Length: 401
Image 1 (cartoon, rainbow, N blue to C red):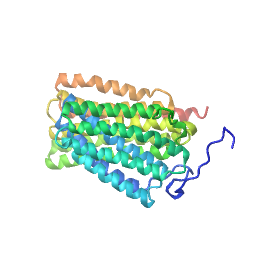
Image 2 (image 1 turned 90 degrees about the vertical axis):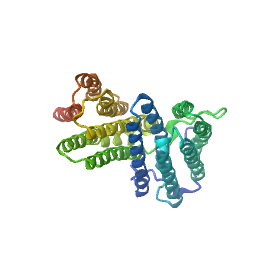
Image 3 (image 1 turned 180 degrees about the horizontal axis):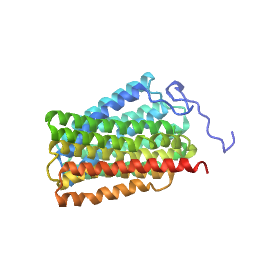
Image 4 (image 1 turned 30 degrees about the vertical axis):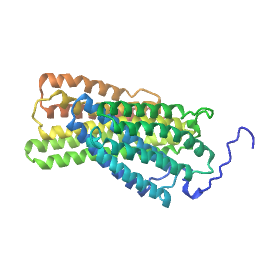
């Protein structure tokens, strides 16, 4: 073997590894695993509604980041392993149970259930990584990656558990530190003294599968927002809430359209065909940018609940930040995602974010009804959809360059 050739891959358990033959399908086991996170998104949305201040928003963001780490690292693992093989299926069911327990602890995560949240988080992250080390034995690139990852997980696990033992303010600081360490570790390839770092281009990533899995999570989040809309509507049915219900539903459809109508399948193609760049593209696109998109859905879902409760009430600062800020956050995350993949600024999304943010003080200052505020958010999101369609039609009219 010459120095330029990759190391031979002789996996000990080849039946556990996914084949590298095109975009791998999402299995029913993975979809079942995802179902748990409907509850997670619901809990985060309710937490934000019950704590409608900057501290509550910050804590919601911290919890979302930790929940996202559990989901996305598990998704990376199933990018390499066969989810329908017995040992991997058992692992996914175990992680699903742990994630369900974490989600149940979210309402009091900065109070009585903080230690439960922390212990389950550590058990899932470390346990999954140890399983991965066993499953990928004999695959040098994968073994190297997990050998670099595991010490970082042990380090952050100590901080997570310490956070569960201290008071709420210190817990915020420690868990925020964990998130920073996770981001730094992933960005730098989990460097270790004397061993260097693991390079993203050697991660053997099937990017199309990761893109489809992340799209599925966005769909789950949107489904949760519709669930919140429907359950709130049934608690008080009259003409005003019926109109608010239609408005909230239309807002969810508009966000779905922005993400899924064209960019989702196109993004899958881009990432699947990125070659050696796939690992680096996926790291930013799915670990960093997709949780911003999901956060936008969570905030918008909180806005939908406020809308259905009192559609005619004057818009407060909190209501405006939920109703307008949710779509703005969603579009900002999606703008960063598309810009990262296509290396060009998504003008329509950037403009929409600026318009939505500018509308916040206007709606609050004029005291317009929450329903009017929601209608304006819907109009701006629809404008993005129209701009996308116009751009595609213009490109088709010009023909191939």
